[in-house]
Image (cartoon, rainbow, N blue to C red; front, side):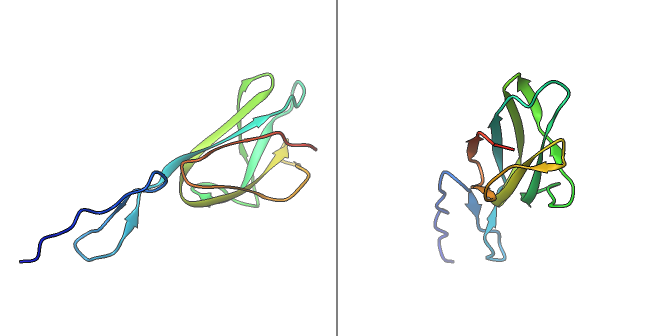
Length: 111
C-alpha cells in the first residue's frame, strides 16, 4: 500500500484530495468595502459574478457600516468580478473590479 503525501495548501485557497483523486477548493470569505458618502436615503449595490447570489442583472445591497463605509462579504472559490451601483441603477465609473477568494478589497467609487 502506497503512503499518501500531505496535501499542500496556500493562504488563498485550501485544497484537499478526496479518494477519487479530484482536487477540491474550500470557498473563502471575500469582502468588498466601499468608502463613499452616497447621501441620505441612497444605497450601494453590488453586481457581478464569482460568488453565490451575484448576478449582472440584479444587485445585492451592501451593508452601511457608517456614513462613509459600505460593506459586502460572501463566499467565493474563484475570482470575483464586480461593479458597484448607486441605488442599483447608476453604475460606478471605470472598469469592472476583481477580488481573489479570501481577499478584502477597499474601493472609492465615483458615479
